Length: 199
Picture (cartoon, rainbow, N blue to C red):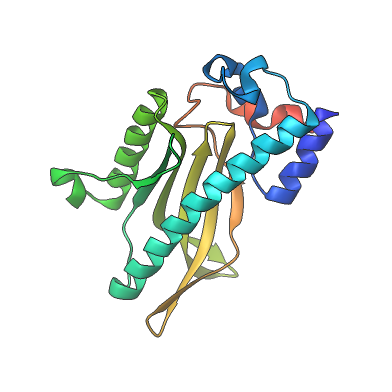
């Protein structure tokens, strides 16, 4: 029954829910509905909506910053954002020479930073945005790649089409993809985030 409910919610919300991974981490959530490692339908709905709201807040903030940077310079650099335990949104900063590192190196540094703060139980959600491109109908389309994770068991990758015309940036409909956990539950088998949903 829970698997059926999960499948329906995933289709509606377009998020990848790793319930087994979250349930295995139950000891970390003594004050949370995940503490017993079991879900009622009501608890499941609360978990999904909480993760969706948190990640939506992060995404809106990050995309707003990308839009400003694109419209000012025609480019944007990788950025990372965290949702702190007190619900504050905080941008991750790189210091010194790291700030002038190539974009792909910055993304690796952001992943390492977010992994560290997540392991110290200081954040509830994290997100990295960086520029990329995809081939669509034989043409190259610029995108904003968004890696996102939530401690409640959500992990995914969104590819958001990006256009800059007459100095104004606009964004297309996101394409969602699976992504293994890298910040909160690294080391858990990848198949845990989806296999049980298929049964």
